[in-house]
Image 1 (cartoon, rainbow, N blue to C red):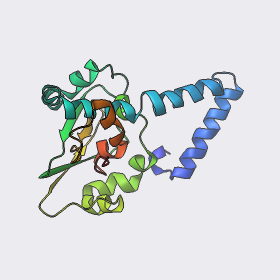
Image 2: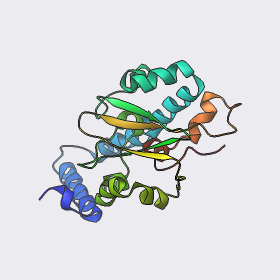
Image 3: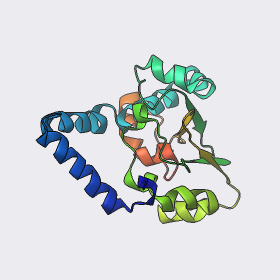
Image 4: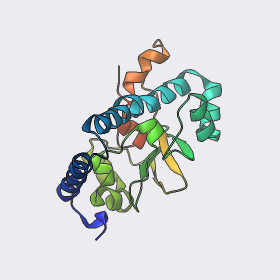
Length: 197
């Protein structure tokens, strides 16, 4: 049976059992696993995407390039690799809000967002983000006005999507480095806005 039919606790138990077996057989060390997880959480994780967003907020030429060719613009900042072959960046505005999902599995732009959150991989999110996206956003605490057009984008094995959230009001005097902490992983998926300062 494929993991699509497992609930989250069963999948976690299987992953833990597999990890234990690999360590027991001497095929991998727990420190090697820890270092890979740490790299994706801290170095490859959403901080990379936040840096891309902050650069786009500060530099109109970079923003234009990012929206035209996300893969190339992101690679110019040094972020590329597995699960990031083609990345399309979608801009949120006052009129349009973008939401990213992968209905088939959990395709996700690892180089800029790190490991996908558990909820992103869940069957509930994957189906409801398409069938009732406003309800899903509301559960994340994000209520869009009726005048805002909501677009749902389905990542797949060929294309990963990343949202360029709107720059929060009151950030005109902040530097690029000061903007980075305002950008969350969730805002780059589209289930939240960027944080206010």
